[in-house]
Length: 247
Image (cartoon, rainbow, N blue to C red; front, side, top):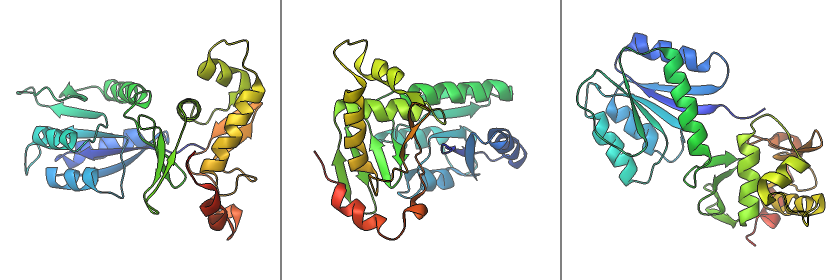
């Protein structure tokens, strides 16, 4: 299964905060972390360990200015989508921050959140996890923070990973993936795609002969960003060290 999208909710109203968390997690689509202060939100969003796909902030937090927090995040290079809940007062134009006036319909907020995530997923700034790696499509690389390791990707390899990631739990057939990545090019065959998949597995899999991240499924491929690393046994880490090199 695909990983849940992680969302931070920062709201000083515990009732509203709990309702939002319940609605976001009910279908298993999102995983929610809550805080009630600007300071708490800044620690969570700026920390190296936790990475959030989106944030829902309230403009009226008890200990500071949520708009100023957004500006600090942007200055630090954090480009995740942010929804700002406002009471109808003054707003600020901050890149990538959508305002939602209170009171609001939960269906409207969820729809806006999904829309912003879809748009962000296709951008060069989107970052997502694949096993131990952070995938940076704009920089065409994978980064393993634990080992301070960087793996270079080609343009086609990035396109394959992004398309599979956006497909979620659904496998993408070879022909659809060919059309999406190479266009309707009569000179490109499934062998071309299979060669790229082979090279990608050499880069991302702990053991390329037993794929746990880039899976063959349903006449095509599916990306499992979590994988089943435990099933690979104690030799997987040593295999990874010998295969995770840039090309």
